[in-house]
Image (cartoon, rainbow, N blue to C red; front, side, top):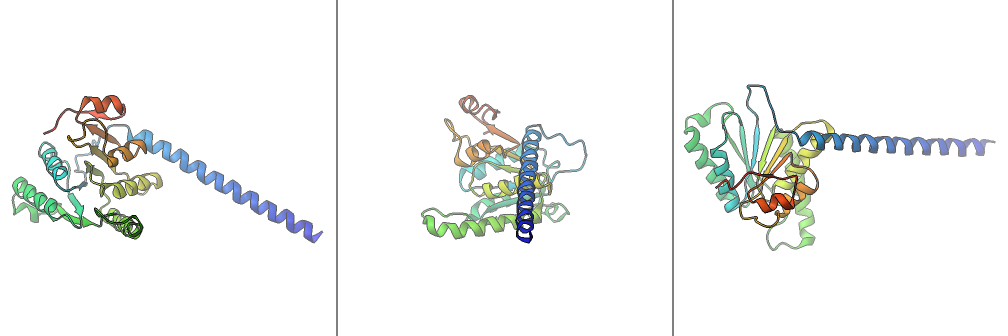
Length: 233
């Protein structure tokens, strides 16, 4: 009898564990669907307060394109601004400094809500072996998590560099878990004429970007959920 009671108790515990697992998975799936559906809606903030904005810069043309985009934005609406570039990319942050100097003036940079400039570890450097990149990827994810907890942006702007992926993934997880809602806006590079970059494709396929913009009509035809805005440069 005691052995039978033990078996019944074990089966009951297993059933409870299975039901709890199914319940958690169901809640997560429902929450993910809700986040994806809500993310598709345009960002409408009636509050007069500005939106803290994270700007992910990439080397070369990526930074030039994104800074050109910032020139046409209502910068007073998107602040404080946090610029992030790869730890090995010093030129992008220098260009961001020049942009802010020309926009606000050096004295204004001392005001509360002024821009901040940060660096993030790369998941993988050019030419790095895939074996060693496992460790650097884990370090990059941990660093991205720390930056997202520190910044807690309301808006994320990016346009192609691979460094944006861990930041966007963490931002999406924060949405699902109800920690912080960050609207992700991805603008594909003008150099992408026939297909999305790997970063853009990942954000598109995984439904992580709230709005994904392309600069060529054929990309809109190939990726229907993207928004065609014409050439921005």
